[in-house]
Structures are given as C-alpha cells and as structure tokens.
Image (cartoon, rainbow, N blue to C red; front, side, top):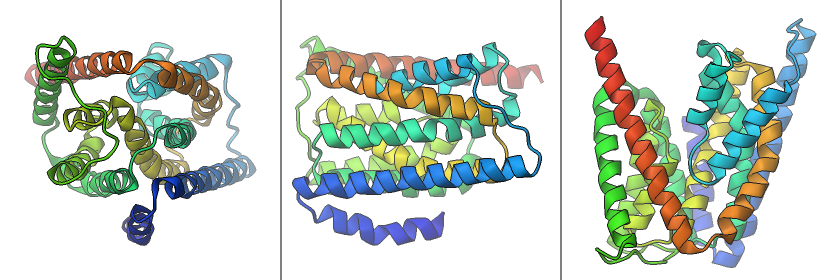
Length: 315
C-alpha cells in the first residue's frame, strides 16, 4: 500500500495543475482503469479458485436485491456498509467473520461507478478535489496500522457528538436561524488546509468503521461548499481506497463470493438510478438529505458506543 501511494503522488500533483476541463478525462481514465483492473484480477482469482476445487456459487436473487437497495442508498450519501450488514445478518446469508471482506469486495465496483458519475456531473476544482481524495488515502493507510489501536468507544463517542453538533448547526442554517451555507466548488486559503487536513483525519479513522460519507458531507458544507461538492470528493476517496483493500480479501479468501457478486451486479445499475435522483433534486432538498444522514449516523455511532459499553460492563 505504501508503494502504491508513493507511485500515485506524482499523478496527484500533476492532476492538481490541470484546468477543470482537463481534470474530468484524467479522473475518468484513472477510475475506469482501476475498475477494469479490479474486474480482471477478481475474475482471475475466481477462476483459479474454481480450478482448485472451491465450488463458489453465483448470487441468489435476494443478494442481487440487497446490492441494489444498499448501493442506491449509498449513492444518496447514506452509506452501504451498515444497511448491508443488517440485511446479511437478518437473512443469515454471510458468516460474521466474512462480513468485512464481503462488504469491501462487493461494494468496490458500485463505488467506482459512483466516482465516475459524480466526477462527470459535479465540477469541483482540481486543486480541491485531488488533494482531498489523496489525503483520505494516506490517512486510511496510516489508520490501518496506527489508529486501529485507539479505543473505539472513545472515538465513537467523540465522532457521534461532533456530527450531532454539526447537524444541529446545518439545521439551524436551513431554518434561517443562522446564516446559510454557500455554494462554492473550491476551497482556498485556510479553508483548503482545513478541508485537506479534515479529509486526512476522516481517512485516518475509517479503519474504526466510522465511515467517510456523512463526516465528509458535513465538512465541506461547514467550509462553505455546496453539498453536491461532497459527492465526488467522498466517492472519489473511497474509490481510491477500496480496490486495494478488496483485492487483499480476494487473495486470502476471507469473503463470500456469491454475496459479493450479488452486491456488485445488483449495485451498479442502482447507482445509475440514484445518481439521477441526486442530480435532479433542488439544492435545498440535498441539504435536508445531508442533515438527515448526518443525524442518523451520529445516533448510530452513539448507540454503538453505548452497546459496546454495556457489553464490556457485562463481562
């Protein structure tokens, strides 16, 4: 992973020097190449597994439906991992020990599709978009080996409170109690440093299962950017990270192929439909979606922290 990030550094820097009209084909080509490489390597690994006698199955209809529902929600900014986990556990479709790998592998292609679509639809300045994407990647790489040792309970409490406070601020802005946010698609000056540094921190805590989407939405909104600007940033960040981590799960076999294929095959078409919904919504409706998503994530984090505390107390 370290070698991969170092190799991409010159690409990121050269991309930052591009004009907006040059950035789109640059990023589209990069993520399309990642998608093709991922499909090729995954298909090769599945073929090799068959040759070795691993009789994996094609997805069931229910797995395709779960992929469609969860990646539709993901494209709206709600996230896919938590809903997918709920569906898989309720249906007893995937063993708990295979859930992380199945989620990563299965949602990689829909996430790449999201990045391709929103980079096409939403024009964020290159000097804002690329550094924020790369910062999240570096943060996630460091977080995998460092932040994962931190107490998850305290991180959940802190993030839950911070997101709840941010949601309240945005809600008051929408209700005209506080000044409303702006509609910028670029960060400059101190806001650029806060945005890039903030996305680095969000990548840093991703190994704890916090998720990037909702915090990234609130970060760019509080910095005066349009809520729509969060979509290419957060989806580009995850599309940058997920193929690498997913191939690791493919390599060690710690995932369920049928469920992962169901997420991928059912999820990509759902992404196309959901992207149209997001793009066609008036901006005020998008802001309300952002507030709702962040509030839900805040409650979820605080609830998870409370359950963890009760579980530790019962031991």
